Length: 203
Image (cartoon, rainbow, N blue to C red; front, side):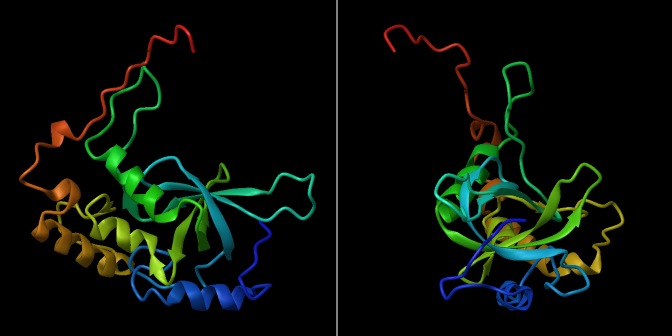
């Protein structure tokens, strides 16, 4: 379990739910607020790193000086963020993948966040949302145009009820031409050119 504390001391599950609900937008799940019925785990932590536009690593608090703080990986739920290239042999970045990650890094690195986990898959991966100063991270990412809502490209046009709120933010981002929705920028130019074999002589 990730041991976490608020500035005022210990935090209860009820406290975490209230803080996560304060965003009023997607809450723990894209389009819905946190509740006891869908929140499996809640707490606070410090963001250690951001590995992609949807994966955030949170660090807890070490109980003693010689113990490495526990970590938790939160996968933002209900959205699709562009995928980064992981190795030379894999496909290249999807357009705006780097920009999506950097958006989260600038927003979250080193900051205290509250987390909510509302789904754990068979391999133990935890899906949920983060809030920072009362703002939903999922809401912010979609509003900036760096992620889309799962199901938004359904042919029948139907959107799950719990994602209607976050889908409205996506619609606004599309109309405003933010991020990946920009018509003024060629998406092909929003891909990193990585040198996988740099010259390291004299390093």
